[in-house]
Length: 155
Image (tube, rainbow, N blue to C red):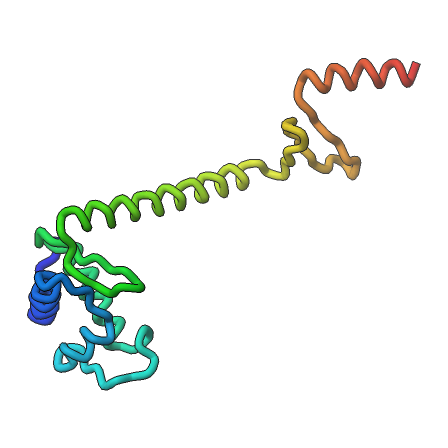
């Protein structure tokens, strides 16, 4: 785990104080109150300014440190140190988001491994070009049926 810098400790104690009061604090308010640390001068582009990027990195560093409290960030309410219940709720939300992301990843891998296959009516059809003749391979049961039908038509 990482050790916190002096500036990160200031942010930690600031957020801990605000959280003990039960307040959510907006990023702009943090940057204004700790302007000597973050060199915030009231930039209009709040989220892409260097001070906002530094604040985000400091929040991440605090969450990755050995400290027992996590910083909870909510885009509407603001930022605060989470209580045990709030932290568990936040972690459950993150878990759900990660599971959804994992599901999308798994579907992409499955799709990438199809290698030109298409699913039609539950049957997997493999399509490829061989010697400039379009060939279709179907399930073994379907192949047997197709062979029987093709013999009848030819004969």
